[in-house]
Length: 208
Length: 232
Image 1: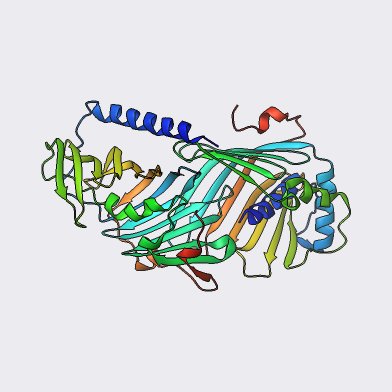
Image 2: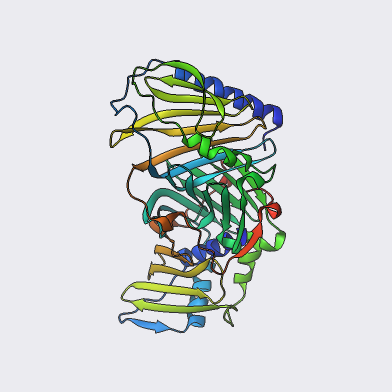
C-alpha cells in the first residue's frame, strides 16, 4: 500500500516539475523521449508549492467527495501535503519516514519505510538519463496545443488501472487522475504552482 | 506516539469536554418524533485509537438499517486504502493496494489493532429518537439485540448509550434531514481503551440505496480469513 502511494507520489512530483517543449499540433511523442524530457525538466527544480483540489468518485456508491489543500516539495526527499477542513489532515514525508496527522482529533501516525523505498532512493534514479522504459507499464505521451497528457497504464492486476497527468508546456501541472481497478477515480487539480521559491525545513513539519 | 498515560489523559479530557458539551442547554431540533434513519450516506472523517496505536483519515460511508454498512477509507492521494463491508454477522475488509480481502464473522475480529469497535457498530447505529421530543434523562432498557443498555436522552434525542460491559457511545452535533434527526458526530469507546470517532459531512438520509453498494467486489482479490489480519 505504501509503495503504491510512493509510486503515485513520484509520478506526481516528476510531472509537476517537468519542463516540456511546446507544440503547435496535437501529436504523440515516443514515451522514452517524453520521460527523458521530464527528467531533464526535473533537474532544474529545487522546490515547489501548489494549491490542490482533490476529488474522489466512488463508483459503487455513486458519490463524489471534494477536498482542497496544498502541497510542497523540496529536493532531495521532502514532501508536505495538507488537506483543509472538514477533512483536515497533514502528511510529511522525509525520505523513508511518513508522519501523518488527521481525523477529528488530529491523530498522528508514523510509518518508517525500508530504505530502498525512501523518497531519496527514488529520486536518485533520476540522476541518470532514461534509456529504457520501466518494466510492467505502458506509457503514452500526447501533446495538444499547450496541453500535454501523459498516461501510464500498469500491466498487472494492481490497484491503479491508469494514471493520467495533464500539464502545460511551461511545466505547470493541471491535473493528475488516478483510475482504480474498482472503478473509483481520484482527481487532483493543481493551481498557483510556484517553483524554486526557497522552501525551508520549517515548511515540512506537522506543527507550524 | 502518545504514551499510555498521555492517551488516558486525552481520553479523560475528551470525555469531560464531551460531558460538558452535553450538559449545556441547547435548543430543541424540529424533527418528527419516532423518525428513524433507514439509510445514511455521508463523507466521513474518522480516528481509530487503541492502547497501542491508531489511525485516522477521511472517507465515505453508507448504512442501511438494520445492519448493512460499507465504509471507504482514502489514502492521502485519494486512492482507496481500505473498504469495510459488514452485514449481519459477516464482515469483509478489502485492501485494494494489496488486492487482499479478509473475510469472516464480526465476532472473529482480532483482539488487537483497533478492530474491536466494529463489533459494536450495529449497536451504535440503533439510536432512534424517543416517541416524545420532550423526553429527557437516563433510562435502562433492553435494546433491539437483547443488550441491556443505559440510554440518555436530551429533548428526545439519544446523546449517550452504555452497556454493563463498559462500552460507551456518545452522539453529538445533531442535525435534521428530511425530518429525521441524526448525530453528525459519534464517539465510541470500549473497555479496552479503544476509541472510534466519526464525524459526518454532506449526509443524505433515507435516500434509496442499491444492493450493490453493500456487496464487496472480490474478483481478482486474494481472500484470507480474519485470523490472518494484523490490525487496520
